[in-house]
Length: 386
Picture (cartoon, rainbow, N blue to C red):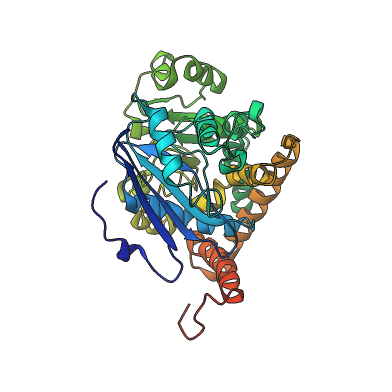
């Protein structure tokens, strides 16, 4: 991992603990950042990437602090990461070594979850290694988990947030043109739900490239190609393959960045025709780009509001970790709809009233809840400014 001054990561909110671990035998190098547990046990996904950094994990852990508070569920912000190729050999040995190294923290201070590079079977490995079903969410259904990737709960929530934002900003979602960057579990589910709501998918991209059609793409056909051939399946859709970032630049009414972080910079913020940006990924828009979009009158649904559907499902899984009964997925979807629509409307309304922008409005909401919890626990120094 690149060198980082951990002290520079610390402020009044956290992180409370940064644990770096390694294992010579497997080559494992990893980190868990427990950002703020004033509202509950640290919970956030575990990712595996060949270019991971401690700073990245810390940023994501902070996002989880705000995300849990914004949806008003009682867990704290945390994130974990493993440096390495998630498709490379020896992955299981690395995951087992990572779990063993964090046995002091898991599950009392942090619970493993799924993020980039990890799948349900990896959550099962964590459980097997630590001999405790409560150490991870995202387990296969056959082990009592709630398979929120397969159910598409996060993407469903992104679409519900888009629906509420469209209503608030006066966009008719029926017939609205949607472009989605990223066609993984989140992008696929977002596209499917938005299509059900009457929107038209005009552009989509993944790591291989992008395809577009102003008359509308066939979501079912694209999903089938993805299921059969992964990201490479996009080549066989029958439309010219464009640069993968082109989906962010093509004419659309609603733009959904659902891939990596910092995908939307100032150039794209100036170029997009979208009237609404719904952040399906974590931290997909740079700070400068947010300013450009807001100056142009483009509404933004912040990441920790728009993509919180997955953590709602994770919260249900957390409650059910030691229960013999499966989670009621119908209830999960109903809660996601309620939370996504309510929070989106509240944040856009607050931004309109204060003129402070949607990200700041969402942050104000989350921070007020975390601060209250810290005050009650005696963790907030009252003589310091907010």
